[in-house]
Amino acid sequence: MQHEQIRKLTGKNVLVTGGAGFIGSNLCEALLALNANVTCLDNFSTGHRKNIKEFLDNPNFTLIEGDIRDQETCKKAAIGHDYILHEAALGSVPRSINDPITSNEVNVSGFLNMLVAARDAEVKRFVYAASSSTYGDSEKLPKVEDEIGKPLSPYAITKYVNELYADIFHKSYGLHTIGLRYFNVFGRKQDPNGAYAAVIPKFVIQLMNHESPVINGDGTYSRDFTYIENVVQMNLLALTTENKEAINQVYNTAVGDRTNLLELTQLLKKYLSRYDAKIEYVEIIHGPNRAGDIPHSLASVEKAQDLLGYNPKFKIDSGLNEAVKWYWKHLQLKKVN
Image (cartoon, rainbow, N blue to C red; front, side, top):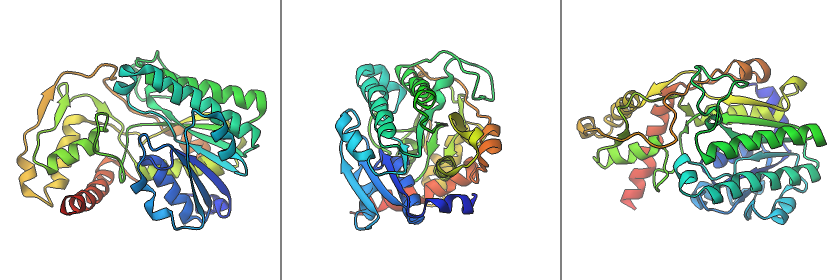
């Protein structure tokens, strides 16, 4: 990472929406390590207090419990901040199919509330979580930022609308915006529980309990799984870049490599078996393909490398190794307690 560049965040005021979530809490941690002043805005609908518990005694950390669907909350939260990292959203394709109205309220209306708040507070930069789901039915690989297809879910529509709104706010009001299209992010603090848990933490806890993970389809669907440290790097680079050409852009936030679900499961079994040999023999079950899922996802990261200086440090194997270490430690502690 370009350490000299990101050190500029020392002493800066940064608002992280969704700061108690998986990605948001990791961003809060990284910013506090840089001695930035961090404000977390979260309504704890999907975020967890345990993710920010260690920050509460830090004098540089402030928690605002509130909902981005409330415009006044957004306006008050944004005042006095140099930068905003907008992570608050209702993720999950299946959730959006089951409840498109709430997904739209949070992901579109809430996003617009934050854009208005950022504009009115005259923040220097608004960096937001976009999504690889924006590529929709485009079959071209690797995914290149300016070539997308039609969305395949309400969630994908909401995230594409975010990009359109951000572009308009840049052109109409001069707000510096950067969107980061996340590709299957995983790592520490990602919730393994709940109906909409991501595949990696869900499979980890099932394997730890000697339960058979269920792969949707034949297991050949592939994803560009991206370890959290790569995502943190991208966010900090996006906040601090002085490259004018890099502003008002969207970037793939990924590794540039893909792994299918069968390969993923074998890697998880391999790393978890170091702690419990029985995990190697847990059977894998196959179920039907999931509605709204795209078969393959692979990102080109050239644009981020060229304009932001992005250099992903973790591939799937090293990232999974780190994630499994974290899960084994923390989920084992949970069992003991």
